[in-house]
Structures are given as C-alpha cells and as structure tokens.
Amino acid sequence: MAERKPIIAIDGPAGAGKSTIAKSLARQLGYLFINTGAMYRAVAWKVLQQGISLADAERIGNIAEDSLIELTGTVDALRVLIDGRDITEDIVTPEISQAASQVSAISAVRRALVARQQEMGQAGGVVMEGRDIGTKVFPHAELKIYLDATSDARAARRFAEDSARGIAVASLAQMKAEIEERDQRDKTRADSPLVQAEDAVYVDSSALSIAEVVAKLMRLVSQKVAS
Ligand code: DC
Image (cartoon, rainbow, N blue to C red):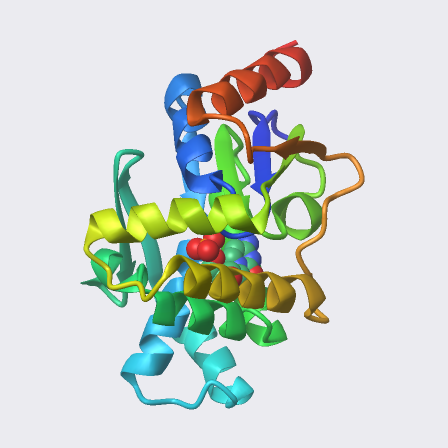
C-alpha cells in the first residue's frame, strides 16, 4: 500500500467548535480541511428546493447518489457547490440544520456521502470533521478527537454566530432547544449515530477558548501524529 499522510478525525455535536478548530489545525499543519456536515446540508438544501418530503427516503437517497457535491476553495474561503451551483450562504440556516440532520439518518444518503468522503481523504494530510469520521469514515485515523461542550455553551456560541451572520434567531432558549433536538436525532439514529470512538480523545470545550482548544489539539498532534 502506498504511504499516506495522517488523517485527523474530529467528531462531536453541533456547536462544539469543530469547524473552527478543524480549520485552524488544517491551516497550521498545511492539511486539507473537509467539513462533512456541509455535504449533508447540500443534500438537504436540494431536497427542500425540489419540494421533496423529508419522509421520502427513497427519493432523498437518489438525490444523494446522483448529485455532484463539491467542497472547493481554501480553508479560509470554502465554497460548497451542488450540481455546479454555489450554495455556501444558503446552507447555514436553522431550517437546513434540522433538515440536514433528518436526511443524514437515511442509510442510502450516508452510504453515498461516506464513500465520497473516503475518496476525498484517502491520500491523508486531512482534517475531517463530522459525526462519524472516527467511527465509520476513517476508523484507522491517526488521531481522533471527540469535541464536546454543554448544550448551554453550544447554544450561546451558535446564537452569537447566527446573530453576527444576520440570521434571525428567536431566542437563546429556542436555539438550545433546536440544538438538543438535533443532538437527540444524531445520537439515536440507527445508522452511524454520533458516538465517541473508543480510541478518541475526549475534549470538553465548554470553558475553553478556541486558542486553548487548538493548542491542546496541536499538542496531541505532535504526540500522536508527528512522532
Ligand atoms: O456539522 P453540521 O452541523 O454542519 O452537520 C449537519 C447535520 O449533518 C448534523 O446534524 C448531522 C449530519 N452529519 C452527519 O450525520 N454525519 C457527519 N459526518 C456530518 C454531519
């Protein structure tokens, strides 16, 4: 087998800081950053765009198989395209967050997207984040992180992020309820639920700054990966 560069898998619930942290690691290491949640969001966007019911697993599975989903650009200016259309700004809404969580429970969707994620990351030199990276997509990743935080901390972060982006959010309490609903679905679905891999390092980011989490992970990288 050809030598491949290391794979760093970051899993955890919504709002734990996975994307921000994964981007920072990728930048510092010169690795590729792959945000797998964006792929589930792209499928959800197309499903809603076409007026397909979120209960229609068969048609949604076909959409995941037949659509061209591309993650392009640089770590700091990532673009998400579906069938050539740039939907980067359209997939960050609360509606798409919930719909992405729903379509991600469909096995045919997971099969299609996991296969592409494995292709995208197979050469290594990648920081990939999602819900099942260390358990399903790359169970032999050199470093696995399970990044967690309390739902209060995660809701507060998402609330601040969405407000800054100009996305209408009803209240902090509603944000927390939405995050908990998504957690519940993502953790209890039958196919590849969100769970900490046995060999993942658990990091609770509730009381840590981004810089502190990044520093902690960079130490783990030098201990486990670079050695
Ligand atoms: O990371 P995110 O919030 O953008 O992900 C959106 C949804 O996609 C999430 O609620 C569950 C699903 N997802 C998944 O099932 N597996 C992944 N590897 C990434 C995301």
